[in-house]
Image (cartoon, rainbow over all chains, first blue to last red; front, side):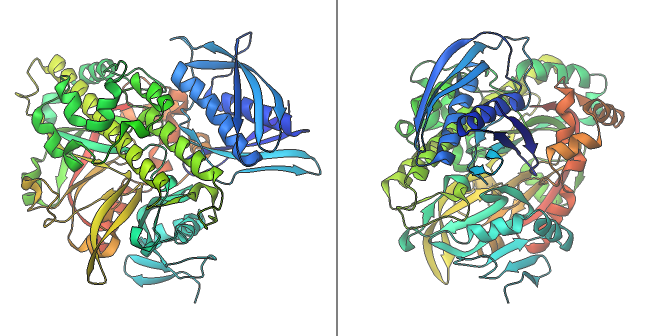
Length: 136
Length: 481
């Protein structure tokens, strides 16, 4: 896994994920989203497979993270792990570990959605970088 | 000249050429200070990007509470003409489809709250669910959600959440037309079933307010407002069903790339021609989510009425708890407007902007045909909110649009660094505001200093002719989402 930092935005919030490989940058962005929302938990979880297709890496990142957000909001789930098994420029398949949030679980900011705003997934001389903004 | 320049006391133009590909100029309604802020946070650039939309009419507008958004600026207004290749952009509506505000009046005055305000806020906390993914007041089973999406307010009234006359005091009488539940994904419905009647998070809230100043006494009388009167303002939207629907349609449109012949300067401006089936599907889904948002605020208001009944031991009818009006500030509507002397149907996108029909408009309820449409403008937490009315003049200035709030002036990160949530809580309470329990750590993200001055925003709207200020209201009790 790589590292991530929060990006400032007037009303919303963004993430810059950095990692050595494109798979790791997707995994890092997932961890970043979960951290921002306060839904990353240690320990084991029930694995859910996520598979999406899009026209490029950027679209895949939005769709992948949107799936994660859906699992959290619709099923009240936290994340315990993320492993991406297959990633091309138009297809991604992976697994997220999940467990149910309880009433005593504290979460953080409510993230409404993943946006396409200033979206970028790029290979640089220092590895892969992904920039993404979320609607709060 | 491709530099921004002033064209009126409260009007600025971004000429064609400010960014590449503009079809029309940008027009920002702002004081000097607010305009400087729009340039500084690059929201002006977003106004110019919107001006590249195919079929956009007249100008890309922005209200004085403009700030940097994603794709569209917040405070953005853009009308597109279906007869001229005009498009519909889900990003021009936002993820929180139909988000809006309603105001309820009461016969109580400030002095009636003495000794009862803490108990009232506690009761509101119990009767008004909030928070992320929080369960709502009205649980829906199976296909019941389809009725909410199709019918909006009248359906939840049928379920016991309110009075028959509440629907009259809503835009579109509580039911957006052409709503089609079949255009909303099952995934979105899954999110919506458990969330109806919940506030949501972020800048959503419920406030007990007191009218502390009337600026237009005759209009205030028509709206049922008087000095010292207790009112309740609710700010909430379509929750997960709207967020998912916007996500679904943005994704579908984005996968088509430039197939419609338009490459947006910001991918969030993805759009489809209004005469294409995809745009029609989205419009019907959007209206369905708009109905959900209306119904959501209706169910929340029902919770408020019950909290007041519990606290004051009098029925809501006896307390005079009528709905003044309900407005949306994230929606795209097909409306008829006069453009170069001809009446045309255009699609008016309002993203963080409120419709503001003037007194002569036939779509207004009878009682508001002398005043113009009520417009509800919440201030930032702990500061004044305002009630405005629309003007006939606004039709020719901004497609009958005005501001929606204070508008953010600072990022959440910076806001949290200035003051802790606990310190802000103490400051608000010292000012006489009773707060419901919340995540105190995050409170300062919504601090007043993170927002523009609402007085300046509404004053600019009035100066520009977009709307008139009727009353100012101060918060005394806050339930933050």
